[in-house]
Amino acid sequence: MVSASKLRRAQAAAEAARPYAGRMEKVLSNIASAVGDIATAPKLLSGTGSDRVHLLLVCTAERGLCGPFNSAIVRLARERANALIGEGKQVKFFCVGRKGYEQLRRTFEKQIIEHVELRAVRTLHFENAESIGEQVVRLFEDGAFDVCTLFFSRFKSVIAQIPTAQQLIPPVFESGAGNAGNGAAYEYEPDEDEILAELLPRNIAVQIFKALLENAASFYGAQMSAMDNATRNAGEMIRKQTLTYNRTRQAMITKELIEIISGAEAL
Image 1 (cartoon, rainbow, N blue to C red):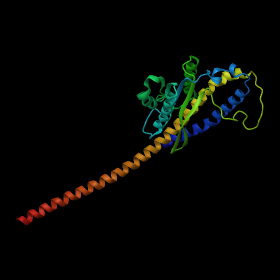
Image 2 (cartoon, rainbow, N blue to C red):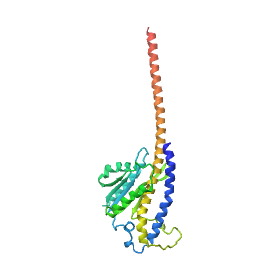
Image 3 (cartoon, rainbow, N blue to C red):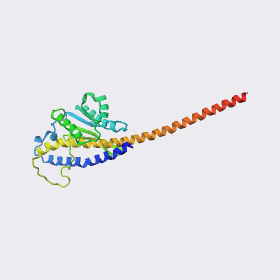
Image 4 (cartoon, one colour):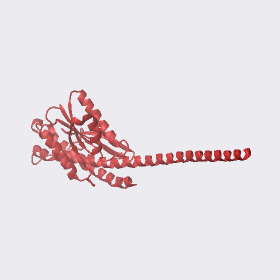
């Protein structure tokens, strides 16, 4: 019941964030397509020219009792990490959330370079995602990685949460996302490079904020389903145990009656 009440607010917040995050990607895609020389574009757009070091930004919940919610996200990140390691790449982890950190440190403890917990945050705000985004950008500027991929769970319904991987640095735009379907051409003031220098770090924070909101809704949906299943399983177990108890009790009563009758007949 608690998860159900929180789910409504979390779902509304996640659904409200999707149009803004989607429009941000379309605007960036449109501006990026107008950049004349990709070599002079900001590094957050063009990348470092290498993909040797990968940072996996894994967002999970702070608590459990939510079925396979956390494990599904960690499994997707672990599979990506193992695939990259198999290709000779170097993998680093940035964990957001206690449960993901606890699972990943069993096998990738030395590769975890950052860990952020949000247990003290009762309501997610953009500032929480912005601080994480600033840390990611700072690591990129310091040359700690070449490619950053975000892992989270996209909310679909109460019984369906989809583990998702989204590349943040350099960003990958869907084909045709920049023209929004109308083929319009735009002129920018100031020039594209200045706009991108401002929007690219903000886009990282926006996408992380969207992921955190999607995670929150997915967590409450998964927790609601898990608790409902646990309640049904507990009720079924109680019925079975009650039946076993009554049968055992009846057998003991019958046994005592037989002993009394046998003793009386022997006299």
